[in-house]
Length: 556
View 1 (cartoon, rainbow, N blue to C red):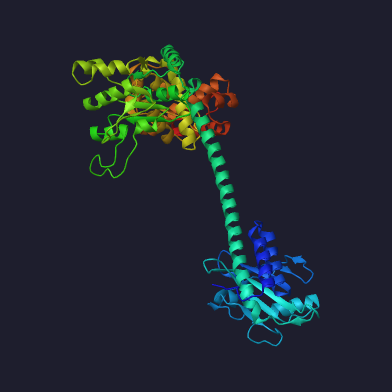
View 2 (view 1 turned 135 degrees about the vertical axis):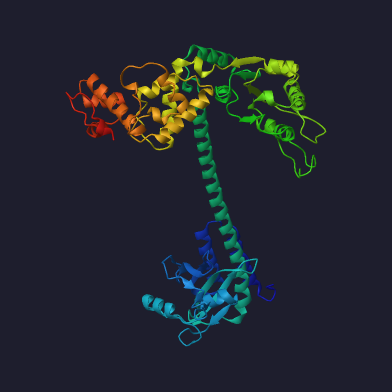
């Protein structure tokens, strides 16, 4: 602890004045100037420099220097390394003071041989002056960590303006000042760092808000009614019912076969309603055993069961203000059905282990492929819960009843998976379309989606979806009915499937070329392939005008 009590009153007054100036300065450049000016004022130094330790704690960097007239220079100088050849740099007086934390004085640098002063000699030659007395003081903060160094030179005699040495009486004063300066410098660094972190955080938050807004807009756009494929009359009735229930809190029960798109409709209801800014949460009631499903839905308190070390909020809490989809509601255990009924009636949940319930604002959409009334008769579903769920029922039609939607759905999934897997698929061959249109799709839209994904993976880029890219249970139906033209495939010959597919492709291309009078551009557009690809296939199958048809050998 430095004791200033032995100093004369004028020195203490000057010390208080300059240190007070430091405590009110928050600009780094201005603070460095104030530190150097204050140190020169207290010591009578003609010139001074401030070095600051960089973030690596390996180099001292010259930040500022002042001449006798108080002129400020921010010229760049080589950094002073604290370590040289794996050892402390004791040849440089500034590095030595930074390491030792001790003040160091030299009465005449041109006669002192303990340190290397080449930088001072070079500076003297440039200024046409000569450095004599030297005082170097480490800047050590409140944690006694060196953060920089003050270098003061050529103390002047006030009367004769002659250069004199720095007396020992100044050691305590300048050391106390250096401590205050280090604390002020440390505080400004912290303020600068905090300001930088605040700016980074603000920029990050604004970026996240923008990304969240864009993501939400993208999701909302994805689930707009106009973006849901469905031109069939049965789907028009579904859209009409959805429109009537959107901005209400009525519970919706979605029915229909597996794979008809119940979750898609549930999301569309949410993202087109006034709840769209809150969360949409989905839970499959058949995916978890009863105890796990209960804790997942309602949450639990710490100690409610073995392993419950802390409170956990459930999906009703997560969906507060938004929508909760309970998929496969027909598989929910009877005990949980009673708890769900209470939520629907009272708008209140009670987590496992809790003594009291709490209110939640959640719009429930339930979905099932089962006949819930049949389950009621079998004693497997509560009748009172059924009537609470079935406030507004919407039944989704199976795909086999939406024949006019099938081509649009096929094209939609083709585009989706072509983009996902980086392929350019020209469309479906006529035989592939016929096979798909003739399938009854017991798995509905989910089955169609999986079929198209597999076909895209099997098909060649720049090609088309062919019958051999489809499952056998679909293509097998082509031969059940008579066909005209290329779709009527002859029995496989010695070449097997490869030749048969080649013959079919060649026949389709030939028929299309003849249809458009051998206009390659129009034929390629009809086949949904590039003109270059068409020409390559014409060469492959030796297709030429006025030729009876493709050579059998060309397909092999």
